[in-house]
Length: 228
Image (cartoon, rainbow, N blue to C red; front, side, top):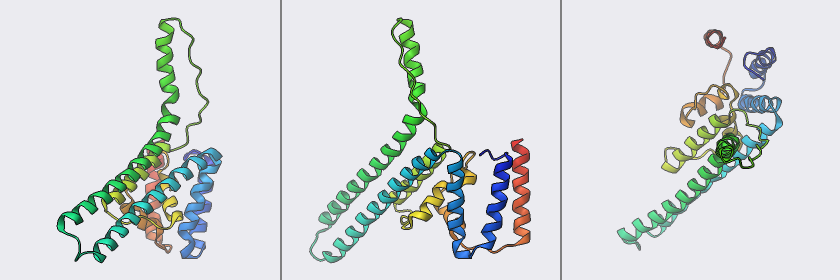
């Protein structure tokens, strides 16, 4: 579903109308549903890829936070017993465990991106070398490139790195994290938003305001003008 297609414009109009008609507490859930519908009509496999990214990032964030909480509880309970060096050593061990979880998440998701995006590119380069020596060339792999995979992969990696650094706590509602990752207007052209910049705008309740709506509509039209 291209942003300039009639089907997308119809989809967007319906979604905007519903957004202001549903109860305000349901608005972010409607955006999540709309984003997943957008992915579905672009190919059901897109939903599989992005769901794997969301789930792996979600549980990694919770694990990193769990290690933080366990460390805080342990140090508080044993603050009179532990020496300064023992406390430092315990913190280093906790950080090392968090680093392993972070690294696993990065390798897993960036690995998916590398495989789906660059496998055939690598095969093409290998075949160019094989052809010089008149050797049997490799067959290309039938891999469908998931829509927006670069954008949402780097978005989630930025999120999990910030959680690891302690910039903010991980999102405990997997639906809200899924909305941040899959928010469809940023799917093709970006930008790659930071969680602390975008999340509250997505989750908070909004009432219809003619002035704000007109300003937003003007920006959308200007964006379409530049796109065309």
